[in-house]
Structures are given as C-alpha cells and as structure tokens.
Length: 423
Ligand code: HAM
Image 1 (cartoon, rainbow, N blue to C red):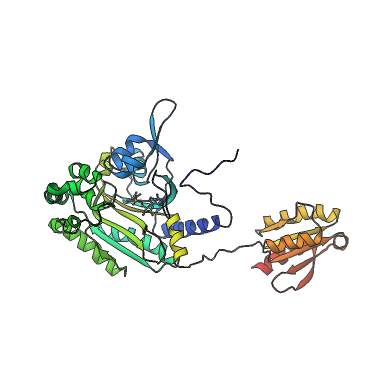
Image 2 (image 1 turned 180 degrees about the vertical axis):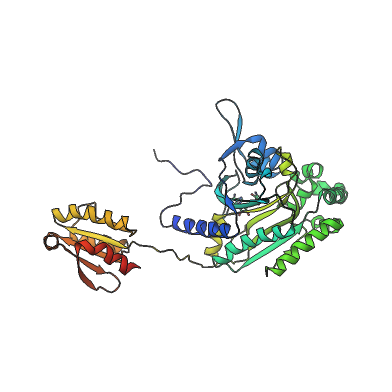
C-alpha cells in the first residue's frame, strides 16, 4: 500500500531545503543584530491556552485548530501560532522579573491550522516570529517592523507593501465597537452567518470578513482612527514618525484589524505586490498586544511582535524571480582505482572532512569513468584521483574541474593543498 502525504503539508527535499536553511540563517543573523534571542516552545499546548490567548471568537479557534485528547483525557492542541505559547513561557518562567526589559524573543518552527489548502496556505507551515515583551515605547514597534522588512529586503524582495493601523486602547476599542454595532445592526442579515455571530461577539472582526469584503456597509463602516483617544493617537503618530525616520515606507489602512483578538494600538501586515503571487498576498502579520500576558496569568505587560511564514516568503522570491545564492556542489570527490587505493580513499575523505572540506567518494564499486561522472553530477570543484600506482609513489592527482588543470600532489600534503586552493 502506498501512502500519501497529508493534505496541506509538504516534504522539503534536498535541493529545496537549502533555501530554507539560507532564509533561516538570514533571519537568525538579523535577530542577533537586533538582540533578539531564540525561544523553543513545545509543538502542542493545553487547548485552553489558545482559547484564551488567541480568542475564542477567532477563525483559528473556531475552525482551524488540531485539537486532540491525550491518553489521560486532557485536551491538547497543535500550536496554530507562536505568540500565546511564547507569552505562556514568559509568564511561567517569570521573565517579567528579569531586569533586562523588554524581553526580546524569536522563534522558527512549524504551526498547524486546519485551513483549506491553496497556493501559500498550508495546514503545517513554518513561522519565523519575534516578540518584544515589556515595553510601551513606540520605538519598539518601529524596531519590530524594521526587522521584518529587513529580512525581506536583504533577500532581494522589492515589491513589498507595508500596511499599518492602530486599534487604539481599551477605551478606543469600546467606543468603536459600539459604533460598529450601530452601523451594522439593522442590516446585519445582508452579511454572512459568521458576521451575524461576530456582531454580538466581536464586531471588529466583521471588517476582516473575506466573504463580505465588498459589501457597501464595509466601505462606510466607522473608521477606528476616528475613535482613537489622544493617547492612542499620539502613540500612533510616534510609530509613524519612527518608521519615516528609518526610511520605511508605509500605508495606513483603518480596516486592517487582523484575525486574532489580542491586538491593541499598532497592527501591521506586509504584502507582496509581485505579479503572479496568487490570491493570498499577506507575507507577514503582527501587532501590539496588551492584556494577553494578564490573560495568561502574568502581571499586565505589553508586547509586540510579528510572524511570517517561510512558505510565503519563498513564494514571493519565486514571484519576483529571485534565486538565492546557494552554493551547490561539493569541494572534492575522491576517485579510487584499485583495491588498495579504495581502502586508502576511506581515510582520505575522512581527513578532508575533518579539515572542513566538503568531500565524498564512491560507495557503489563503480569503474573510474562512472566515478568521474558521479563527481560531475555532484558538481565537485576538485577531483582527487588515486590509483594503486600513485599510491606506490605516495602522490595523488588533483584535477580542477572548472579549468581541467591537473596537478600531482604528495599524498601527505593533499589536505593542505586543497585547503589552500579552496580558500
Ligand atoms: P497571523 O496573521 O495569523 O499572525 O499569521 C502570521 C503569518 O503566518 C501570515 O502572515 C502568513 O505569513 C503565515 N501564515 C498564517 N497561516 C498560514 C498558512 N495556513 N499557510 C502558510 N502561512 C501561513 C500570527 O500568527 C500572530 N501570532 C503574529 C504575531 C506575533 N502577532 C504578534 N506577535
């Protein structure tokens, strides 16, 4: 019986995985420069964490979680996102007591959402995300946004659009909530069933509805920006001023409300405007949260972060025709002819590898011609040919594949010779 991979998941095979490693390395380098430290949390958590942390009226919680009972009957959920787990860890490990505030964390790992798979949308996907917890300074909002933009830009993406909004504070959201209810309530039956439920539970999320996006009530809905109180407005002005100072272009969209419940003040998304990118254009989403740390059992502490999937990032690179500078091929392939030479080649590749040289040899008992072909297929920079004759003379033949140039080198100095030539 042949098995198939589950829908919405993918194998990342050699040839492709190098791109992932490259992107992850750049992401880690950026985090290091911005002084963010990696955190690794479990793949599954108590379901309750996401009910509270993500919000029980959100699509994620209502429709998309992979929830199961463990053998002791506890409800567990494969993490659909990283913010609630990071905040859980922040509280559980009492990071709020650390004098180095804000606590700046990042993560790279798989997330799980039971969504309808399509281009750019998977059921298992890898998020790179950051969370800065413990500061109310609008400069940290700009810092977090700058990090995401830096990742995309340093990989060569140009067709990017940063959209920002402010959801204000509790007072703002309350006033705006009432205005939304007043706006929609008489004609709510014209909107989808989900929106009818949202009117009661979380009217802000109506603005995020994909089905009713083009309904006239959407365009005329009260803008949150008109409900910002002085403090919230001042905060948003500061964030915008810092982005401008950092030379990061942005657009303001008062309808950017985001699909998770925990946001206050700044929210943002980065979209790809590349042609042929497909229907889903959001590469990255994030924002500021307050109330979340408290909801999860810690002292009231503000945070801000973003998450982006590597899947969508790679799709955006493809759409812009960008190839990553990934070095394919190996440094040296050792070709051995004859029984003694074969034995010796086992030691030689071992020595080369220990010296930091990417080396391989034949394990299929192939003839010399087939070994040379294998070296070619592996894109070897050098081929080291060892026959029993050379072995008797304690030398080895080195061929540089790009030039065809050949050299006879004493066997005892071949490692140094190759190191020198490769440097
Ligand atoms: P989110 O908007 O749900 O936010 O997801 C963030 C990003 O994850 C999206 O912009 C997209 O790149 C990627 N993503 C989401 N779902 C999928 C999927 N099914 N397939 C592929 N990629 C996907 C969050 O997750 C928040 N935790 C972000 C955050 C961090 N806010 C504050 N801190």
